[in-house]
Image (cartoon, helix red, strand yellow):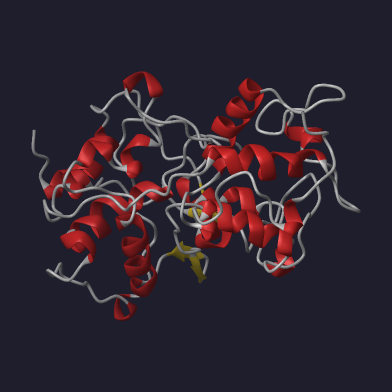
Length: 314
């Protein structure tokens, strides 16, 4: 059923944004799950110039529709200030190098908002996650959708129990405004052989002043190898499947796998309990891993930065 533009946006007063720190901005709660999404406090009128949709917009998508009905969804509070129920912008900013690539909110006179220029950049980044030729296959729709309803795993939590959720339907309708010939971004196929031979040993080989990844992530992608031997094929396959959710294939700069262990002074995440493995984005080990994320590194021959004696090969 079509949803009129007038009904997409709440007419309730906008929720006031709370600036928790210069690096993390979250919204105060605005009510139950099915309430319409409130808009952020707008900047001064002179600063805003409404950009009409043009055929030159990414994938032909409607910018005005995005600005009024879709972008406010990224600000919506999910029930808390820390954890998997917080707003999208808390985790998916360009600063965090996460998919979606939202711009950090602008603070001015106690208000937090996106400027027109920032909204246009958000629009371009979000467009990379949609597929107008097959809207239901869009990453933007699959990540927050419950796996039982066809969604994918999402570390930020499940926001929609079914495609009937109002937010899902608004986003799906926006995606259909794009050109029917515009498809999804190509997805790089990560090479499992390179992972098993060259990437997996990184997790159990610590560097000075940093814990091994397996110290905290042994229940996920950094499972310990059997004593005195290499991982079984089944263990490697499970670790590979777990790590994929921290990788944006083909886009190293938006992969949490490469961002979290990087020192913040070098552009890394502000928080990582395991310490910092890399102090520069040009660290040879990180560059070798980035080549794998980009789809360039394949096979079982490991480059020098990824050659380790532990665990022993079978």
